[in-house]
Amino acid sequence: MTNLIQILIQLVSGAAGGNAVGKAAPKISLGSLGDTITGLLGGLGGGALSGGLAGLLGGGDIGSIIANVVGGGVGGGVLTAIVGAIKNMVAKK
Image 1 (cartoon, rainbow, N blue to C red):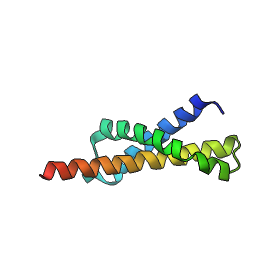
Image 2 (cartoon, rainbow, N blue to C red):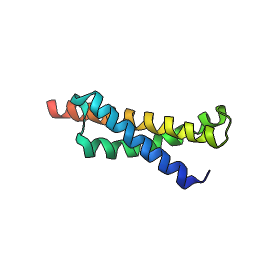
Image 3 (tube, helix red, strand yellow):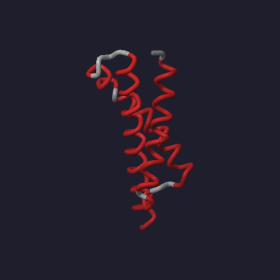
């Protein structure tokens, strides 16, 4: 699979993960645009870190796709939660 396709999968999964966290935990939401942008960035990071997962899943195209979706979605959700929590801590001071 080409790198461009992998990056697109990571971006879309990250945006979905970021928006899912924003909807599930409105107190840490950064707003729709903020959740999406943070999710995009987290998706790239999470997808890059999930490269080892692709090897465990067989390393083929389907394994790579699953690894990129999971890594991107989790990375986007985690980064959105972290940034939202930091924003709330700063706002309270």
